[in-house]
Image (cartoon, rainbow, N blue to C red; front, top):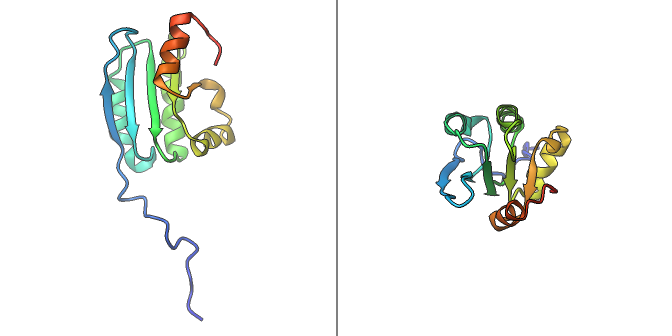
Length: 133
C-alpha cells in the first residue's frame, strides 16, 4: 500500500516570503511596519534588521496579511517587546488573525502586546488617551 503524506495540499514553507513595508504616520509619530507573509524562521533576517533600525517609541506592526507565525517568529516579536517595553505605547499588533493570536497565547506571550483590529482604532484610542486594549 503506498504511503500518503498528511501534508498533501499544504504549501511548502521555503517559497513563502515576508514583505515589509514602512507606512508613514507623521500625525502620531508612530513607526508602522506593514507585514505581508508568514513570520517564520526563514523570513526573520530582514525583519530583525528592519525592527532594530526603528528608533520610534511607538512601534506598530500591521499584521493583517500575516497568515501565521512559528516559534522563531514569536521569539523575535518577544525580543522586540523587550527592546520597546519602556516605550510609551509598547508594541502594538494590528489585524493579527486568530491563528497568530492563538500561537501567541499558547506561548503565553500575548500579554506583552497591545492588539487592535485596525490602524484607525490605534489612532482613535491614542488620540482619546485611552490605555485600554
